Length: 246
Image: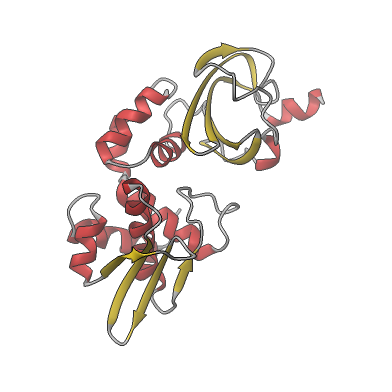
């Protein structure tokens, strides 16, 4: 459940700009975007002497990434405008345990919900388990990255049997699931399959027994660098059952 201030900011943003258009929203709010300078951070929000500026690191060339950063900084402007926010390594994720502060969590949630409004997204999510093909269609519809679309879609899944895991190399970076009882400690910290050789789509048994029982549908997508997204679905094992078996 979101605070009334968060909901008011989100509703305002959706009412005064074109749908999912942070650049149009910046024009409405009188915020200038500076993106021609290399920075040590992903982005900055500066409000000083009547000027409102969002700085984006010029080294970040991915358009979806830039779009998310601008939306994130607008979230800071609408929710936390009394301070200067310098955001390092902004995450396309709304997991409070991953972010460095409550403000960063709220700004990420604002960006995610502004770019992919729930009332538009829900009809696009299939009733069956999500596949990356479904997520690709959602990403194209909202003009966002596969990572953003996957995170939001899995959280709002109708089947609620998916777990989305990001591994950097073979090591756990983050996860997302509609299951709120699932914790970071429940996810294998080292990927139980070799991501360098695993097929992009397969049904496997044995590797994810702490999370599922029986066959698991596994899909792999590489968004960038050495990171890989692993999308799992199947018959979930409750954490109580998993702990009892141990």
